[in-house]
Length: 517
Image 1 (tube, helix red, strand yellow):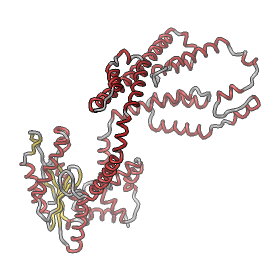
Image 2: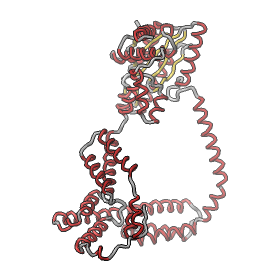
Image 3: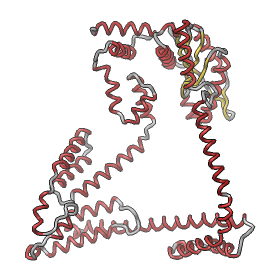
Image 4: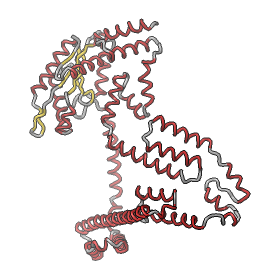
């Protein structure tokens, strides 16, 4: 089949489906004809190509939403981007970059010249705002390093001592080197290096669980060049780092004391409540109550006192709650029976929800029920040629209602619209919630004009209705798109057509009904 034939068939398909000859509609129809002709055209493979680039969870979500066109794919991505927390993503990216830099700085001191050089260049790359291509190039260089790394050189040292390929420092310490080699090292430089290591170790907080970035930076500078300790400016930085280390420890101590104090407060309240509600209070428990009430800020500042008080309370509680424990064990079987009953009821409720065909909010048919009715009407059409019309409704600017009045007000509007839809429908018509603020009406033995009449009745009803929430009137309008089955090649084409006319109604100003004239 030639490309010209496919083009002609695509134009015929658009006419049969009642769609306008726009670039988007034409591209969709053209790709369908390419697929029907079992031909291969690169422009029609973009959607599958882009789908494959997404994470598996997003691919699964695309499948659930039945995304079949590039237009639907773009709308899906836009909705995802609108829900993205940019601040959170920026913070996470900054944290990941900082973590990567610290890991690379650690590599530079691991005594491997090639890895250290590559790590330095990688740090420069991160700080220069590299492009994804440059980042990928360095990722490949690291992969090459891991693949080609050879540590067999360590085996040459076996004659001088034991070799541990997983611990280079231990290997060096085990080497039996002559004293004359050690004597060549400068005593002053060795001492300075030892001092720098001790100094860096002193920067690490003794109580706090993490090191501040300022401390990490000065530690890195001293580690690379111990001689800078003698510099006056560096001396000031060291003093600030030590002060910061002390501040971190103090903050951790404060948090620990507050945590203990909070535990004591909660324990005191629970114990006092038990005492006041029990008829069997004894002198020991009353003494514990007085002990808790005497707990002061002075004792909270001393860990030993706090520990002693907590230990005393724990022992007293253990000795004086045996009766309560026996009572609880006596009721244990009853509690277990109730727990099993609750689990059984929860399971039955979940099964009932799955089998339900009613939307919990609007009390109309839900999407599952609508799909079943649509298939049934399609079977009637194919067997008895009974025409039907589909009307798609969508509440205008519904997001603005939620943002202005709150989600509870939005739910109230959806419920009110459901009642209007049900009131205007005939007994033979099927109306339901198609998803979100979108609704579908399935009108039996009805053509396009009949669907338009119904849609206009609903639109005018909504327009003149006064929807109130907490004494505030909420302005609401609705747009609609109408299509009939006989003018389309399939059920899905009819639904798509109604949805496209709904989109056209939105585009042309909202609060209107669009259909094929």
